[in-house]
Image (cartoon, rainbow over all chains, first blue to last red; front, side, top):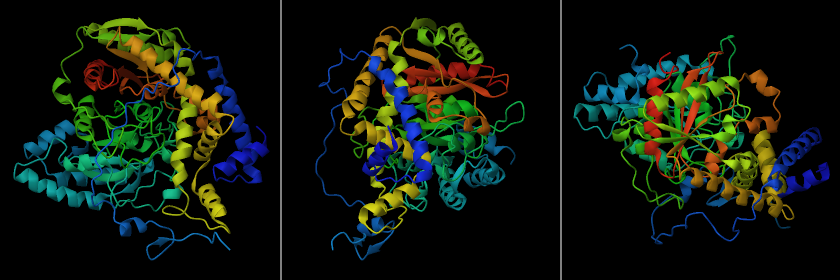
Amino acid sequence: MDTKEINHIAKLARLKFDEGSVEGITKDMNDILKWMDILQSADTSSVDNNEDDAQELRQREDVVKISNLSEDLMKNAPECYEHYFTVPKVVE
Amino acid sequence: MADLTSKTIAELSQGFDNKEFSATEVVTAYIKNMEQGRKYNAYITETGEHALAQAKDCDNRIASGKRLSMLDGVPLGIKDLFCTKDIKTTAASRILENFIPPYESTVTKNLLDAGSIFIGKTNLDEFAMGGANLTSYFGQAINPIKRADGKEVVTGGSSGGSAAAVAASMCAGATGTDTGGSIRQPAAFCGIVGIKPTYGRCSRYGIIAYASSLDQAGPMTKTVEDAAIMLEKMAGFDELDSTSADIAVPNFTSSLKSGVKGLKVGVVKEFLNGDLNKEIAAAYEESMNILKSNGAEIKEISLPNMKYALATYYIIAPAEASSNLARYDGLRFGLRVDGSSLDEMYENSRSAGFGAEVKRRIMIGTYVLSAGYYDAYYLKALNVRKLIRQDYINAFKEVDTILTPVAPTTAFTIEESKSFDPVTNYLQDVFTVPVNLAKLPAISVPVKMAENSLPIGMQLIGRDFDEETLFKGAYVLEQNNSWSRR
């Protein structure tokens, strides 16, 4: 991976690396991915891709309950206006 | 009232029953210890005042002979990854520096319902990502046990603050979480007991998520019995976590002391024939002998796919983390750093709010899930994960539990850790990570003091939902080893 690819992944992850740190993360990513190459030698031909071994996810009745009130939730918002979260302007 | 903080949870409970001391006295003694132990940086937030208020209620119940459980009046440290209503919860991250949850996690709610007292929120690696408590935004925790050369060593991680707080008697017990060893390894480094229960045993509701298919909560305590007491209350079905297991929680404490006669204990061929550190190998053998002389049968087993476990883990965990941590966007809660557009605001907030290791894992996770790489990395890792679990299922046809070391070395110094690159750090998790991938329970118990005077821990791994066997085995190891008798 080169710094161009790193910047692309960073963009997908909504992260930014400045010039001082992009080299470091590029080296780390390359070292880590190289180390993961060992997996390619694992024989997974016997594994059924379609078989999901996770327990079946449970469903529950849709019952109305009082849970978090919006007022409490809004207390942690960095910026809000009345009952709305505010964001930088997205339409001109 | 000397030495209240040296008591185990079981001893505190008995003392409350016999009215030997009050919960207020116990909490006061712990608060004093916490003040003296601040050099260990075990707590991010101390909640002494809140604890004293809780103690008053406990004392009323003690006076009327109506204690809620063995945990009633017992002061606990809570890893700062559990949401606690109206008490700041940071995940040791700048991005949640001022976050005050409007709700209570199920595990902490269960502990409160049992009458336990919360004395503070413990330090950890940022978002539980790390194995030495060095990635915390609030600074590293320090191991209360010093190396023979007088040097300070790391606590391990990610539940490093919880381990240090228990080891230094700054709480009677603590909660931890374990995604790839984060309960068991710090327990081993600090000379205490920790158990990662079976996936689904404890509810994940309200625990700040790192890797949802691997995360599990568990207790960290001075003794095996205390771990059993705490887990009984922490565990249980919860409809708020769709992966919570609807399986009754056994009475762990009642079967704890029944011994290991006839128990079949597996020891791993690949580890015995591998390049184990000499002292760790000696402790491994000593532990086998303890179990054997108590009537257990030792049997060599093979786990051929273990060599793939670390790479598998460091694909799956970051992949899930990159998705889980997408919620920190500077919008609804947490740190916000403004930008000229919405995207820039996201990027600025996340780049300023997350530390280097968290960013590294988000980057790995984003990469292995991205178009063109998904099959080669993520899907491959999911398939290898199945092979790893199958290894254990095969082994458990022949044995009841598997004994392995917890960590490849004893605790290291902070200076030593600075020379580690990310891959070297990840290699520390070689014995713990496969257990999370297989969703099995495992307990970590200190068994021996190394020449450098630091503790060495061993782990017992069990079948799905068979924590009972682990407690029995760990109890025998605890009662017969040289660390506990030191």
